[in-house]
Amino acid sequence: MADTTKLKKIIEPWFRDEYLPQHYASSLITQEKVSLAWGGEFEFDAVVRQNGKITAVYLLSSSEYKTKQGKGGAGKFHKIKSDILMMLGMNCQTKVMAFLGETMFDEFNRQQHAGRLPPEIKSELIVPPREIQQIISAIRNEASSEVTPTTFHD
Image 1 (cartoon, rainbow, N blue to C red):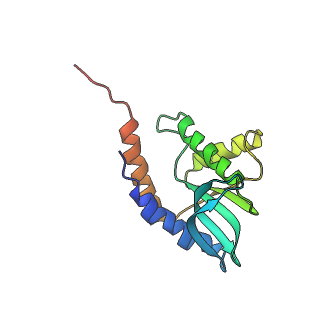
Image 2: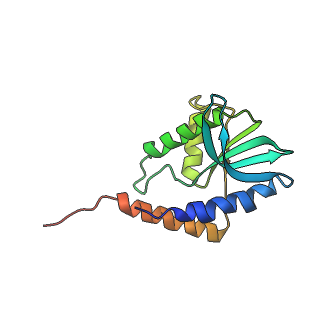
């Protein structure tokens, strides 16, 4: 199993602590579990509060939609749809799916423009600095090698 702890310990904190403050300078940005409109709770990768009120929620996807073989990753996209459902349960002004994978960002926008995803969910392609991109690439390569079929020869 690919070690994805660096996503939680390096990538997501970089997103909250360095990337988002460029857009929300005077806001509190945390990862937290918040109440949904229908009564449950969900943990968002970033919750933006201004004057104590939640004004934005973000979920961060590091996945690419296309596999190394060029096929679409339907299972990965189902995760995005599940995340969108949780965003719809939030009563806040801004709901954003943030993508580190360009092909997942493109698929999200393609599906949204075709009317298959709600228009109120914004999408944002994040271009991280080189050192963060290298960590993401290493995680993707490890995960990809685990699911890439191998050919056995007699």
